[in-house]
Amino acid sequence: MVTIDSTARFPALDKQIILTQTDTTVGFSSQNEQKLIEIKTRVSTKPFIRLYENFAALKAQGVRVPNAQKNRVRRSKKTTFIVKGKSFRVAKLPHNSELLKQLSWQFSTSANESGKSYDFSFCQSKADIIVQSKEGLFEGAPSKLYKINAKKSERLR
Image 1 (cartoon, rainbow, N blue to C red):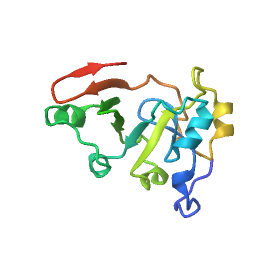
Image 2: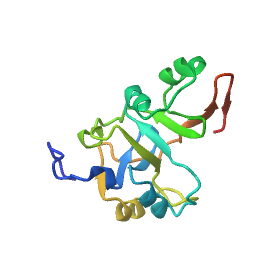
Image 3: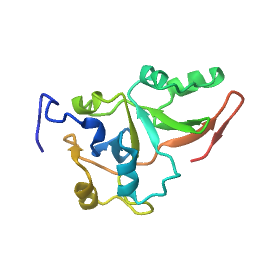
């Protein structure tokens, strides 16, 4: 593993596939949705979760959380929400990577082929950049998933 103090080596970070530990499980992150679709061998109609660093970034992307649900979204941990067909999660990355702090949002998905379990050798071959803390990468439980609107919320996972 290489330790760097500057991210100047990665000028097109938004186009890279990053293998990293998210707040829930090990996953691929990128702003390039098409590359993620190819890696996961996933149908292109199934949307990816957008992972935001903070609520300001969420708001800047035009995601409007219903007033009745704002407190719930703000206080939730390891939870993904779907509002008007857009899925998102606000999560601080546990390792506080300087590399990932440059991106205010990214598509996030579990690090495996669709329908299969986590395999580090597969992930290593598909990722452009691997961000790993001293604890390493591990497959944890997926985030809870809620579909919310102004009146109600429905747990999907």
